[in-house]
Image 1 (cartoon, rainbow, N blue to C red):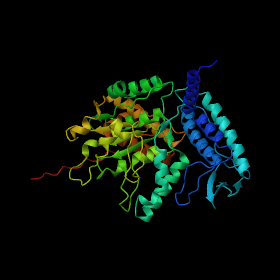
Image 2: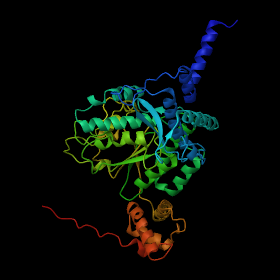
Image 3: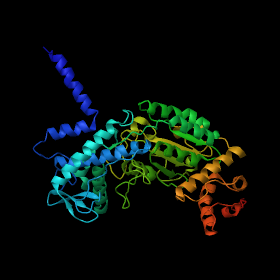
Image 4: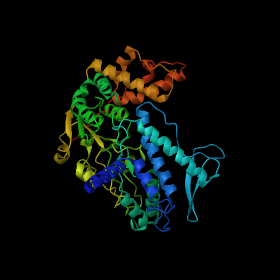
Length: 468
């Protein structure tokens, strides 16, 4: 006879297993609503309409597709499934629409409707394929993900979006943003390095020998923890060095290695903290900041994750005398506990878990950075590269620019003479800009390789005025 405590333990184990499996959660919800009853997830508080189980199922499938695509790309695999398919034209641009308190599926391509029966059949097939695909991933690759946006807060704001602002346009923007967020989902994948992460870091060490301290002290430990299945917010890193040592380019490569979005904030030109945490709803031009937008919707074609790279350029150039401190949002965002309940000013009341962002800031000096901000960063001093190190870095920069142009026939190799000329004339940042110009000039002259003349001349130094 099974003892009561054993039955309770078994039941608890099953519940824990279900909570760790998003597919199990969905199946449990569907089993509890076999009669097709409605679930509490609103798109519009005024209409008071709740989607049916199949709507929730479709929504979660879309979310899991985006979740799995991140890991598929990291592993060099291609997903065989996408969204629902139109019966009439075969397009996968099938979207949900609400009309007369009823959801239906419509093809964006041909404007034809997809029947409920067909949609449910396709969702069942997609669901099975998703589960089969996820079962082949290592457990540390396919995780539950992070609940970046509080579903409770999303529902509350959706119901009361008109109370956020008295401005009609601001309320409409909040409503549209919430609808889009509900459609995408509130969970974001926690991205881990791919199995070749050690080799990738070795390549960075070879390419950026002056950044070895940054790699060894910050990147390698955080990569190792994530690859082992653990979670630990990477130490915010402040790179300090003279202009042109490659700080910006190095930071962009980290996001590329992790296959995660990156957003950049130029603090030298910032006059308020709204670039990070949005502009409050009492302003007519209220809008979300970079933290919310990147966590919600991704960046530059890269799917949103729970751990994007945030690049803060020229953090030492923030001027004094601003009415609103451009660094104000950082005091909370750089602390793990406060970052877990971050709120964008344009969406008050929506708690956001921003505690997994990888922060990288760059500066030429520490003298002008407030001490409380400095204390929140792990500081890495970056020395200027030697001439030979600069040449290797410029070669890599040029090859990456050619790759980005998708000109497969254009020569990605650059002669030593041209590189020497470029190193002498340009900083790494300017060389990257000039590389695209040089490629265009070479093509205009019917060449598939660049020459020194294609880069033009270095800008003349601006004469410094004497003041008395």
